[in-house]
Image 1 (cartoon, one colour):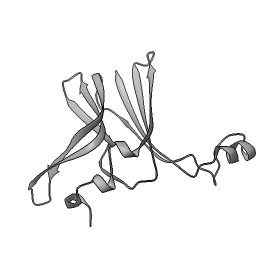
Image 2 (cartoon, one colour):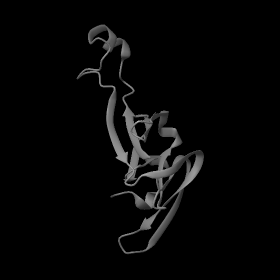
Image 3 (cartoon, helix red, strand yellow):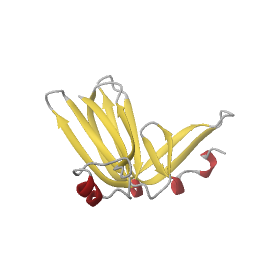
Image 4 (cartoon, rainbow, N blue to C red):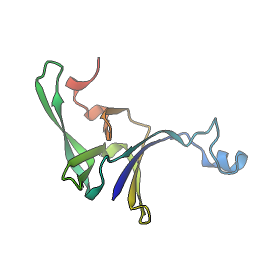
Length: 145
């Protein structure tokens, strides 16, 4: 199965009433529904995925001087995937960022789309594709200066 992840930041100032009254229910240049969207397709077909709510995510890597870092981020939703080749992948979103989620399965195309609608009321750090962490929970040691 192919897995697509959609991360969409919702505009809190969008007015459906304005859209209904003046634009036949559709968004307009002055009344945008979504501020941005990132779509990712997992690079290999997957055998399974699990969504874990209210868990922790380990952000790991190396500083420029090759010193290893490892930070645990709490209160996140994590998507664990395993591909047909056995590769394990994780994607994560801070719980406070999530407005809603949705899952759409297309059996004919053998694909699943997971939608994560993010609030625009918190600043977001996006250290890598598919990881969205609320700025207040992001390690200060990793913030770009």
